[in-house]
Figure (cartoon, rainbow, N blue to C red):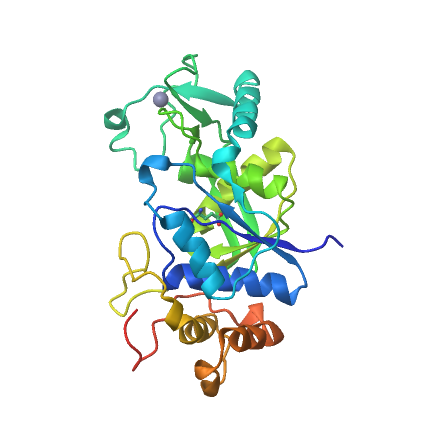
Length: 295
Ligand code: GLU
Ligand code: ZN
């Protein structure tokens, strides 16, 4: 049996909020309950979208909330050579191709690339690089969401692995880095469920091992908005650590006793590790409990 390696991979385009705490906590608990390692990887692929102070703020919040990581933090900004080498290889093998379509040309295709440049033979300079997808469905068994299937040709299309502006795409970087770091178990928010089949395809293409997946439900506001990029909830405050960890446990279906709300961060986390039951995580979003302040 391979030893468990988990990870949390935040993008520094914002600070951690309650929704990201739920995902980070689930990932941490799943690793600790398995006596595994838990890594942090900064997904700093897109400097223009980075928020000043977000990297330090994210790491500080993890510390304040007792979610200590193992080893050195990995930075995707230091991994460009590895991404580029794979892109060159896929390009030379004809598995990826250059796309010069403008945003305007792609309007109306519903985010699914129509394949315009597939056989155009464009040069890779000043072009986006797309990977060719097969007309096949990819599926996997998520530990919480169950079977999830996506037809790559119809539902994803040939997707970008290097943007026209030269930045590397999340889908490629995440697959290469999870393999490079030996990650065995990915626990993350359900907003990435529909990215997973593309990632499975890249793993297959590159001969990489497939990790196990667990997608935790997204936390929504009482009005149904999801927390996060579009609908901001306040960044996590240090003073709120124990009660918010308690609420995050409840959101994950882990029924922490009421009196634990006033306990220390370490006590809340110790309870969480001792009682961790991934089988109790709800598939659907949990609304913040009635009577508690809105997040
Ligand atoms: N960096 C991604 C995000 O913050 C998460 C990547 C992942 O967990 O696969 O949304
Ligand atoms: Zn194109």
